Length: 600
Image (tube, rainbow, N blue to C red; front, side, top):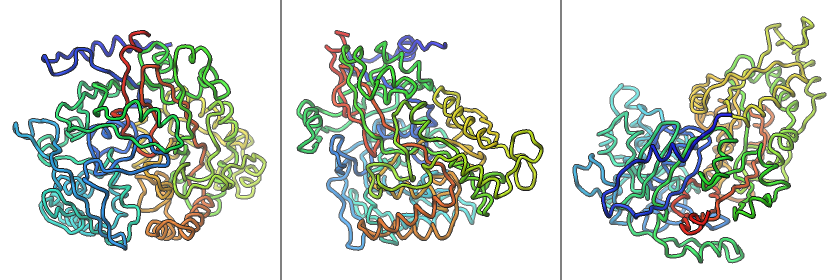
């Protein structure tokens, strides 16, 4: 088995000298692993979770979430107060705190560069610049920003650079520290967009214009960390931003949250960030990640890999040998859903005709989710019924659909009825026109993915369907998925907001190639999506969301698998750990106990 000598690799990579006084004699270092490679650190260009983990610590949006509050609590980050909005939720006004500065960079020519309202105007405009083909554009498109849309269309039509200097009413700086958003439609939950630090953190125009296409490798934000040594797809180091403003830990957990109250009492008043350096190692295989944690080379394993759950958390409880070492378990139902999508534009599995719908529904019924949970995930999951994630508004744990029904008999009958037959007697079905029926599911090479592939192979063979697994790295699979070049792919989708509308976006036509990787397009669904998106929360909106779910499930562009149960483990010297629910910024809220680490 391939061995990862992480400590030695980090020592070699981090041979960086510090001038006297620049850093503590023994800086606090937090070491964590990413399960897949990053793609870059320019928020406008990224969609993968692992890059967004990093950008959430480099940039800052107007708002954030309390790290301990459950249920969630929004709070100002660079804003001076919570946003003001009109009664129809179309006009939102935010005032920024004066005295916040970007980290030092040559782009600023030796001057301290203050964050101002115009920086957020520029940040939002970038998502509409067609040169970036931003995966987040489709989400902002739905917010109702016609002035920015017009700038985008003018650039596309005339084949000219995007006009960043043209003022629009949609996103406007009223003065140095005040920004106003004027939307064309009611957006009751627009504040969630304003709190997306990983994507909507402010960038400076001077930086983007200086580095151009190299800006993903030159992130410059106002956040608590800055990018240090970086070996692509291997090691990312984030170092404390020495110019970060005075900001202190003030989390407010619920009164009956004993664990949260204990964390808050211990860390209250500490200056953020408490950790001096973050060392993020890309370790795709679960076994090396686990060994690195056991050896003390990683401070957090989040979560325990499913194939190792029986050894680490047997029966859902921390193994005695780990408890003896002072290791702490943090167990939660994650706000996510794992899915396999069918490319609706693919000639084999796509399409809206009865026989194509029947094929997808048969595949969905033939896959045994309970076996995946019990054998592959060692019980660390709940069956998913829809794309809506736990803990989000609209998620209903009592809602049950055919998606969770395991019935090879019904699947075989459905395939027979619609002409997917074994015409040549070789044991494999052909398509109704007699052509080969072979599924191709994009794959990665890690151990968990291989185990899941075997479940797919077993279940498809039971209904006479061949399946192949072309393999490449996760970022390449994501690129292919966004471009509509993969027939099928399996991935996990984590909720980025407290609202389940994000789950419905995976079926929304205009989100094709972004949230909607299945490229599902149905006018009736899109109408329900738009209706739900503009309604305030309440019973009427929940009913519209239910109708949208039923319609999407009927066409089966996705197979929903599980909501993952995560058992995160932390070393005894890690203080303040709590897995974020909808947000990614977290490491600035943790601390290290140097004495406990030395004792180890």
